[in-house]
Image (cartoon, rainbow, N blue to C red; front, side, top):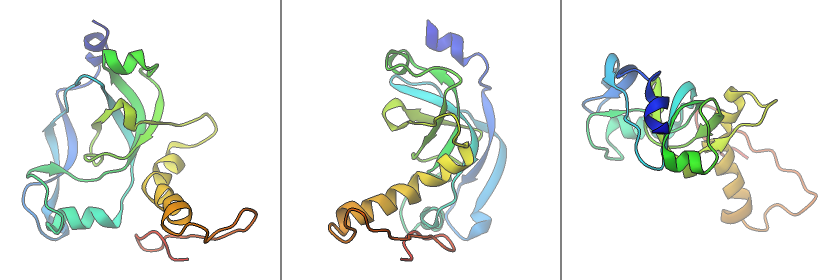
Length: 170
């Protein structure tokens, strides 16, 4: 089966930044033998090259937004598809595709991502730029098109910049 053949290059353990108990920055520990996610139906495994660091990640680590423990931190990443389920392959996703995404668990070498959550990264766009655009870029888009509808009119410009870990200083 195609999915099993593609998994051969994905190791059984990986390096990941893991939270086993909530707290300050010291609660986030790098582990070198954390289990690599297994390939599930409708998903891919992404070999991460970048992980976005967002203010909300501190809320998860501190326990303000509860998560089941232990968990791998992060929720924004970018990299190359390393393994593809049959369902994802049927959607045209291939091993080697450059992608960005927003799902939990991006502070790791590998992340399991539903095919529907993948954002293909076109040639000419760096994975660093694509990864940085997922959470904050989509938040800026939402704030100008939905939350504040009619704030920005066609033909007008608005600078939205995130400084110090928060989108929307405008």
